Image 1: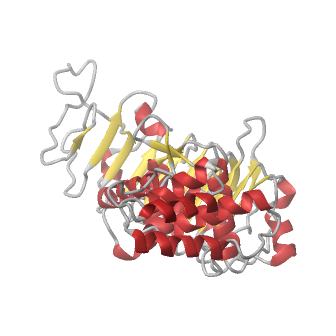
Image 2: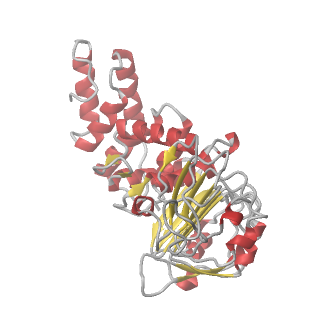
Length: 397
């Protein structure tokens, strides 16, 4: 076992072999444990050996003995993460489907809504902290590189362990992630009162029943990856989920009237959704991140006076007037299209506005800006006159 060993410390020779034996020669287990013990001394290795042995003293329901060895080793690596933020971010990654390419921009919303909400950080600060946390998880061999710096993956077994930790080991931070199983089935089996995060993929219409009691639920992710039909979300579906902070719905049909009781909601992501009763979006007074990908809302401009805390707005269908955008005083990031343009250097026959300069902005990703488009807090922006938002942002959606 070479991973994590200080080659100059001869006292590790014996204990490192014992630790490798506890890993049963399994590469994934060796990598995770070795990463956790990198540059540690003999005392830490001996303590790790004891912890690994103790982790295997009890059976794990539904897991065969060979896999239990891996579970124990990966849980050891999880326990050795140096911050609660890293541990929670690890659990959040398990909410995405198996073999899923997890874009960091997806995780930004989750981090703002669940991890750093009490600090009220800027989106950019949250993004920077998230990147540091993700790097720590990759160093611990709990997340995998994908070949680009905008996304990560979670090994299938690591994800299984994360779900096990989140749903069984941690009573105070339960997470539930399933494919093809309904909330109603889980509710009848054991109840949902303790769950903080729930992710469901490919669920049938009848499984999204109203009357579910989830008083501690902070994150809900509903995904229907099929394009030939959409997931029907009942109007009263959210009534038993008053603590929700983050809602992601992919491929759904819903009335935004159903969201009006979610007074704590900070992040709303609607992707490929058919939306009605859009005026009720204005009831979400604490909303900070609004992401509308192929989910048109026609009256967004009328809501600008009500969504005063909005920090990030992504809208790839339809356009917003400069007057409406300027009514979001806390806006830090905007990705979308603005109507009634003028482009600097173009004649009035081609355009009725000009390209204005935006001084003191950190990320000049904009193609064209309307006249006098200035915000003291705006840090990132991609603004298009054409049909869609920049592909780079769409990949992070």
